Amino acid sequence: MENQVWHFARVQKTAGDSFRTYLHELFPQDAICPHMFEYQLNADRSDRKYKLYTGHISIAALSERVPDARLILLLRDPQERLISAYHFWKDMGHHPANRDNPFFIRLRKLTLLEYLTSDDPLLRASSHNVQARMLAGGRFGDSNAGRTGIYGPDMSEGDILAQAKRTLERAFFVGLQHRLDESAARLMEKMGRPLPAKYYALNKGEARKSASPPTAEERDVLKALTVSDQVVFDYACELFENDR
Image: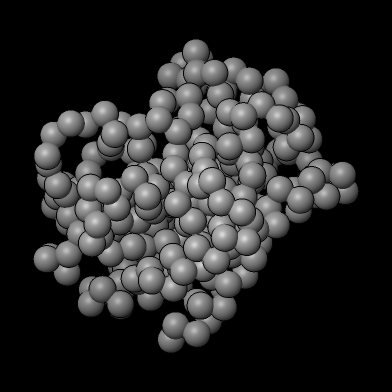
């Protein structure tokens, strides 16, 4: 394991903070990339290479720096992920660090339906088939404002699906958010490490707990925005069942 470079590629609200904790426990701190967002990694002009990358850094971006990194993935039901992300970002929008961020300024006053139906490119990049597009070669935005969205790839939906599935097939490990503890245990076993001594549930979306369930109209829009994501997620579930 020590001779490999590992990349846990993740989009927001897929239980990534919990999952990366297991990985961080396997490496010394100075072997872990400190950058939590892709735009930060892109701004780092040093030649420093790390053994573990766990920020919101796309597969396409890291492959340019570390072509042979072993890929670890964790996917979530796309509609549930998008609902969770909306409420999380609404809450984050009130944090002083995000006060002047255009993404949070635009999202802050929107209802769920307004967010889902927005044609604003900054907002749409965070809502439209995010998991599938990242797996197919899309990248996070190159600024703090764009850190929540995936941009590209410039491909047909069919090609995006085909490439996303190929990425799942070549990944070292594909886990599932709704089977988080099992995914963590399987990953440790596959890496030749002891099973977790404890299981984590970090950064859970507290803001969503007080929100009303999505309406039928919101559900219809959620479904339309995540058609490719759903196909990819279903395929990930199939791979997870077969990887025993």
